Image 1: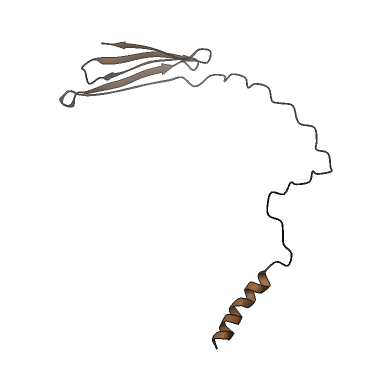
Image 2: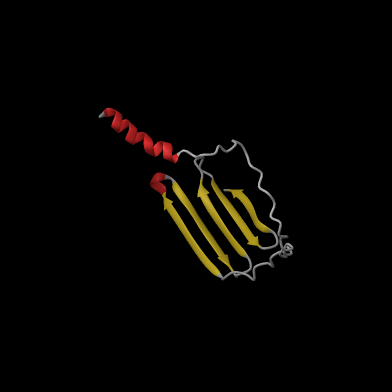
Length: 114
């Protein structure tokens, strides 16, 4: 009985065994005999963005009991962004960052302490 069970279990294994042995290792693919089309020209550099939409926002949080004081104020005309944010530091000073942003010069911060 046990020999029949073992034989029935081995039949699928024997039938699934490949008949030919393949070499182990990396096989280099053969090149395609058909010529490939000429590469398309590289795209030109993208033109600068035409500008964004004007916006303005601000917020502030102040809690004297827990020594929390920070805020942000910014506005844009669609081409240039100007703004300022501040935060109360643990040593009692307030760090103020005034900034401008545009496409030519990028982000330009000025950091001061009060």
